[in-house]
Image (cartoon, rainbow, N blue to C red; front, top):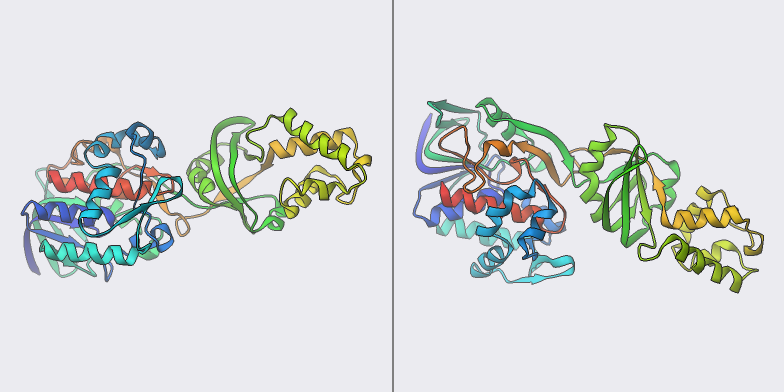
Length: 411
């Protein structure tokens, strides 16, 4: 076997691995970056639908950590290298940024490929050695220190090691969960892995009729066995199988957990700024104004016509009925559905459709100020491999940049 010696060996050349390699090499360390794919940053290219949602310009750190599961662990990382520092970092290496809707930060070029090319050039400028098409087969540990990592035809011997192998989401990009197996084998605990930021399949068959209808700034309430568990507000859309869109992706991990515990319902409030009585008064005004109109046509002034047709089916109201002939209980049911339109989740989609992984290396086994392992003296972690996941909107990339920066700085 060919033997290679270095100061820092980084396994995984995604966002966290690239940041760790840049920071480590800038300290004058000899760095080897090991990647199983034939190129670095394969999953990174998918971010922001290829437009590269670099981060989120939420500069209030207490608000920022609320966008993550286990976000408190990241408070120090964000204090050292948060969204402001991330934006500054990219500006300094020649990537101008713009802040768009919901504080999402993108490169001016709207191109993940162009950002990756600049990062790759930065690695070369800093003399980082990149080993491509290399799988780590084994980690050799002695006296609670990693002695070497064994590849297919190489051995890499380093003073310190940073694992940035990602999660299990989008396995076609190389993010297949193999890193978890490696670190579990040397003693680390892996919190149960679940797909997150993925669409949700709905049981009701009529959901197909709503395919393509989308809504913005609506309230979404989630119930378990008729008890409200949490709330989300935002954008979502109906699909041929169920529901998707940013707000749905954000709740999918928690919905997946609840499905294991009982009957789950997702309730949509299409008039979040009005009470049920106010909605009732609003509809009654229109009913009185147009008593001879077909009810479907009046209601279509408030919500998309195809959605109204489905809503009237659920309410068991004839779509061709004249307003004057609407019964009191039918009017009441229409109002209720405007404020509380429930669907039943059957399942969340698997890792092939998930953007990130829920679960990972237990945070109890990682020092939050340095990302150093509490079990192995010369091991550090960064990125999706650890038990943290965030909402859509640049939050997951930000936590990769931040933890990658810490691991690179302190390793």
